[in-house]
Length: 195
Image (cartoon, rainbow, N blue to C red; front, side, top):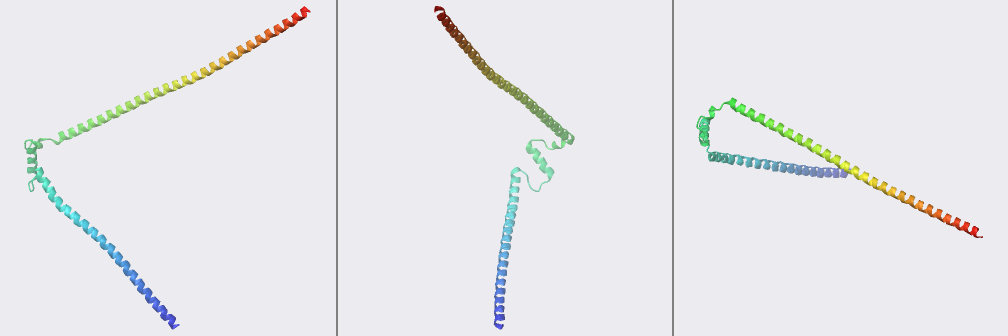
């Protein structure tokens, strides 16, 4: 019994050691996965930070190329932009918002009218196409009907010819039979008369 208990304790210790190793292996795997994920996030953060830093300098370089200077007031920038465009300074301020809004409304109305006209033309074109298609279909049906009637007429004509021919043949046969009967009767009568 004591040997059995000693062997059970030994097995229990081995099992505990195996379990502890497995837990340590799983924890190290999870730690490695977390570390890799953190490294990816850090790389992305560094990449985006560098892009932002260089992006700002690129943006400022483009601003200088366009002629927009740093640290000047908005009014001064507008004045310089007007001068570059060839508009005398201060003239942009003379435009009224009402005139601009009216121009926008007119453009919108013109666009709506053009859209309605385009839609009307499309509908008219579709109606015309449908009418033409219906006319073509009617002509096609009429042609098919004429072809069928012509075929039927041809068949009836052939049947009538065959009936006429058969009737003619029958008449000839009857006439020939009548003549034959007459000649036989005449010959018979002639023989009787001679005797």
